[in-house]
Image (cartoon, rainbow, N blue to C red; front, side, top):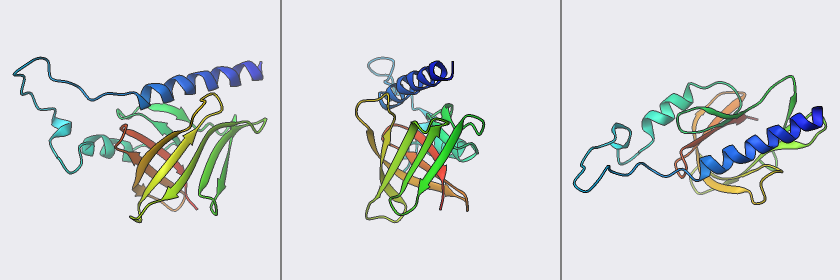
Amino acid sequence: MKRILTTFVLFLLTICLALVSCKKPAEPAGPGDNTVDPEQTDPEEPDASKIEAFKGMETIGLYDGEPSAVFLFDEMSHEMVLNVKERSFIIQDDALLPLLSVKLVPMQEDDVFTAEIASPSVEDPVNTTVKIVRSAPDRLWLWSTDNSTGLIILNE
């Protein structure tokens, strides 16, 4: 039963990751439609309102731009592993099978990283640029403007 549940969770995670990475911005209703999306008014930070909503989330996991939880850490059925030296974070099940892994590669700016997000049910990891939008002693809030996705992980 546990194996079936794990397989189901992996399947759902795969679908959610695919949907989040394939999101397209809204298009105007037709020619001449000059309606401005209120979330897109700041050219410096088009996701400003989404980021503010995401920063209010507290549970470790992956969030889409609403922000709605795509995958959340569950203390009862998951374990977390943080490798500070390699800048990697893994959520795994009780059988030590990884359900979500994140590896951060620093870029030139201090708070910007390339994140490789993987799941065993996804063939190729998703690579995206993430920025730290909030930090606490025990957690980091990372935001990807590339696909309007948020990620809360353990902090060193």
